[in-house]
Length: 437
RNA sequence: CGGAGCGUAGCGCAGCCUGGUAGCGCAUCUGCUUUGGGAGCAGAGGGCCGCAGGUUCAAAUCCUGCCGCUCCGACCA
Image 1: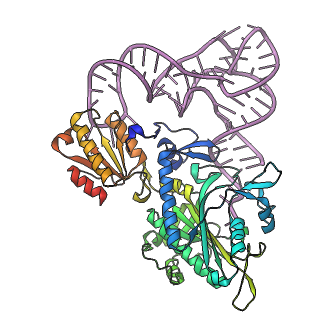
Image 2 (image 1 turned 180 degrees about the vertical axis):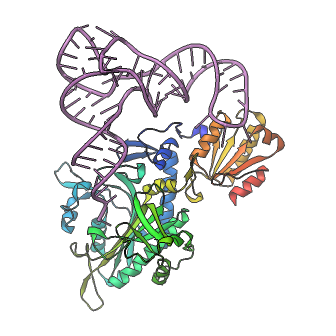
């Protein structure tokens, strides 16, 4: 992509409304524009990141055996009356009526709709287990939206739902999602720590929050410091096996959110306990028959009886992750994207646009990178070097290839790794191979 | 939902107290010079001063109401 043809409105100064670093950087990098409180438009650069994250989530859900569907954003109040949640959900639910006076709502979550789908089609234990998910915009009318996309009112969420014959089977599904979550966050370059969490009014007796550590996180968390070095070996998961022993091994180290932590009973000695702040990026629940019973989602059992299915729900805040990743990965100059979610892999910087030699060298390498399928953003603007460096550091692409008149003459380019700042002068071909490899 | 603050050019801000027809920096456009970490000079364009009402000869400025946004707290299946 040539930057002169792209739409990437970077800002030199920070808009006053942005207080936390991820929000500031997202606005400055031209990723989002606030439409109203807690509601954002996604501009090209931000949208690319959002899609990258969404795709990783999708692939790991598929790998775990869940099937993607797409449910509507607008739901009928009737289903919520049936589950008993319509009157209890409160003002966070955006309610309205259609032209016929029917009560409608903008979905804050989808247990009702998915259960309705399930109960209509699935009648036999032979069809279990099943896991369905979708990635859809949600709306929760938060009293006080803040932190940019991390605590918006409208947000993109992956929510999955599992259906099993009994509690024992449901725990196997829960375990699959548990590992899928670890794999998902691992692929994004994040250290996400599963923490025992309060199940809240949703009920059930098994719940974990997945928290990534960041100084500006809104949750206070406690965990054993060895968690930081624990390897989840995410690439190597057999979803056909019983994953519970593996999870037990992984979760031997203590980790709990503020609500669940009690200093008096905490098993970790003080010197090993890490008190930190974090961003909740995922939350999983097993809640038994809390929805299947009132909505009467039942299957026939082997002995000819009827049983309400045991369900779990599993959420990942896709749009929140964009902010969360920045919170966890940035420096003074700007964002440092993990490779897997970067909007482009390489920034190709022509330091002297209009100079025949540098133009030729940059154009040539741009062509080769594009040919090789590398996502490259080519800064072909007629700006001074300093402005280009500042913008490219700000948007934080993993690699920068810098071509100036000196290098063009000597037949070398400068390859810079954004995360470390390491730079070396090498031949264009060598740089090409490095960013491909 | 309690408390506090802010709305003036695309962004950051001054002007308001003490009323007199709107200014600075950056950005944008033109020209020249410059060119490896947000250049220099010269010129130019861009404003229902959040909205509505009131006071006044006169309102960005004073008064009232409303709207929007932000921060602290509570909240966050």
